[in-house]
Image 1 (cartoon, one colour):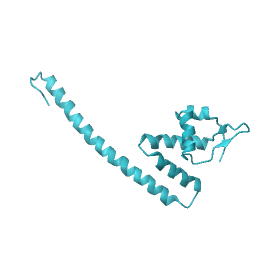
Image 2 (tube, helix red, strand yellow):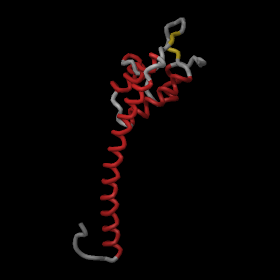
Image 3 (cartoon, helix red, strand yellow):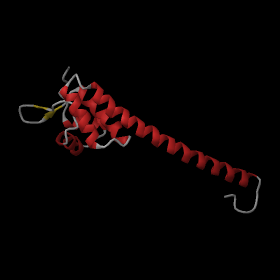
Image 4 (cartoon, one colour):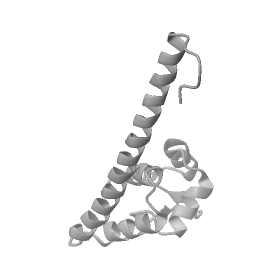
Length: 131
């Protein structure tokens, strides 16, 4: 695994996470690798760390709890042999996202129907409430 020796500021710029959030992620065990330090104690990140953090951003955006990301990170840090447990975590989240998407599609269908009804109503100059 190559090390790029990226500063916390560079990683913040590349991931869109704040320096504060990066420190929080480290404290909460959300990083899949150990954050190295330079001779002055400054954090050093690798390209792999940036890739992992980009995944964490997407996990969070999809509603994955920090505790689940932390558990996944711990499993990755532990290395091979726990792939089935990692898969189980990811599948559970996948099912939650699929359920949310189905609910959102139903909401979108309702809104699309209402928009179409109002457009028809206005296009023909109808009177009354189209609801």
